[in-house]
Length: 337
Picture 1 (cartoon, helix red, strand yellow):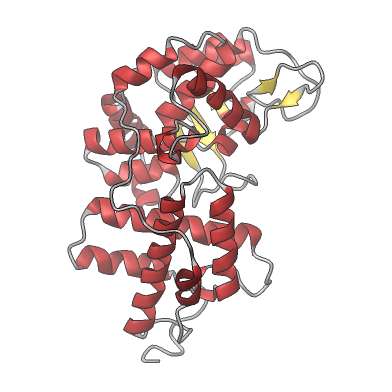
Picture 2: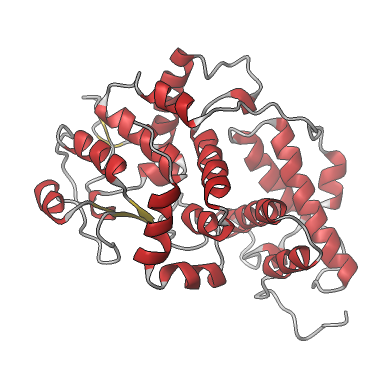
C-alpha cells in the first residue's frame, strides 16, 4: 500500500471518503446521506461487534457486513432502503480499495451485495406530508403522553429508542418549571434543552447532542408532566407505561407501537403498504431532517441535531451553543400546534 505504516484501524476512513466526495463536487444532500449511513454502520459495529478486534469500519469483515444487513432487515426499513444502504457501503469500500488507502485489499461488501435479493427502487414512493398535514394529524391525538412523544419525534428527529431513554434529568424547561416538575438535573444541560447522551445503550449517535426546547415543545412536555404518574426507582424516565401490569420506563417498541396506533387510525399506516408509505418514528426523523435542512439551508446544523456529526461540526455547534444552535433552530423549526 502507498500509505502503509501511516494508516491503521484508528483512521477515520469515513471522514476521508466524505471529504473526497465533497472535493469531487457531490451535492451536500448526497454527501450527507452517505455519511449518515456509514456512521450508522460504524455505530453498529461498535455496539454489536462480536470480534474483539473489530471496533469499527476499518476492521470490518464480510461477516460484519452480513450481520449489518441482517440487522437492517429486522428494522422498519423497506427492502429498497436496505439495498440502498448496502450500495453505499459497497461504494465506500470499493473506493478505498481502488484508492489504495485502506488496510484491506478486498471489498468486504462485494460478495454480500452479489448475494442480496433486495433491489434499489429508483422511484421510491415515500409518503409526502406537509407541516399542515402533520398539524392536522396531531390535533387528533388527545392523550398528553402520546401527543408529547409524537411532537418530540417530529420536532427533534430523535429515534424511538432515544426518546424512550430520556430521563427527567435529561430535559430542561424554564427554571421555575424545572423546580416544579423535577426536570433539568443533568449538569450538561442548558436551560430549555434536551440532552441526548450518546453513551446510553440504544442511542446510536456519534456524539452527545443538546436539542433546543421551544415554546411548543415545552408546552407539550408540561402538559404530560402534570399527569405523569410517579414511579419507584432512581432513573425517573420521562415516558412511562400507564399499564398497571407494566409500570416503569416505556420501551422503544412501545413508542413505535403508540405511533402506529395513531397513524393506523389516521390512515398513515397499513401492513399492506410499501413501508416507505407508513408513518413511523423513522419516518418522523426523515420528515424533521428534510424540512429543517430545506428551510435552514444548513446541513451541518441538521447533522448536529441528528447526532450524525463528527468532531469538526461538533466543535462549531457546541461553542456558544445558544447563539449557533438555538437561534437557528427557533428561527427555522416549524410549528405544529
